[in-house]
Length: 244
Ligand code: SAM
Image (cartoon, rainbow, N blue to C red; front, side, top):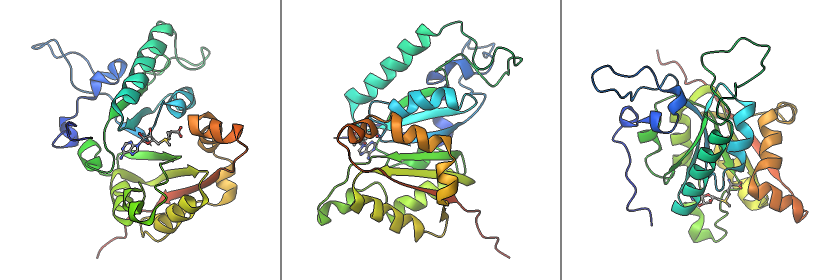
């Protein structure tokens, strides 16, 4: 059950410095603590499971703060512990290419990933501001096969509107599943939504995030071992129409 979950009243109430301490801004002289973060989370992995995608994306997107959202307590804790362990293991290591002068917006490896326990079907706009996210990943979501369970799928017309709200124009929503029926369902709902436009196959194939999503998620690996098919669809957040 998710009844014990607490959500911030608004994104301004989220203390992201607990998740990304390396990106905390200078300490407050009076209190000695800082609750201000130097950059916003811009990549969200919805239903991140054991975090395979997060850990693979971390070095590929060193300038982005990446957040996994997961409803299961023990799985969330597993990812949080793994983040801690990887950060410790890489302590003191400079991020990026040593030949490039260090960039203030970068930190040591794995400082840019974290995991939060949340039911993403509720309160997503409590966590993220309008137009905050540049990428959302929906990797191998639970299929909910039965028709009466379809309302529990993480893509629907109203959830597409929530994703659109928290995404910036030009941002991308990435979907992958081995269940063809779910693939068609996600494509149907996102394609019908006025805020999204499907990305061409050529662009999809050239996108490094798609390659990572195919090979690095736990489910993606399982499907690979079982010789299943991985259906990918990517959608771009369109600019809002201008009202005159
Ligand atoms: N994305 C991972 C992967 O590809 O390996 C995990 C896929 S797993 C089949 C689906 C995950 O979504 C599970 O870990 C489940 O607990 C999580 N989940 C399901 N409904 C959710 C919700 N409403 N909010 C957050 N996470 C959810």
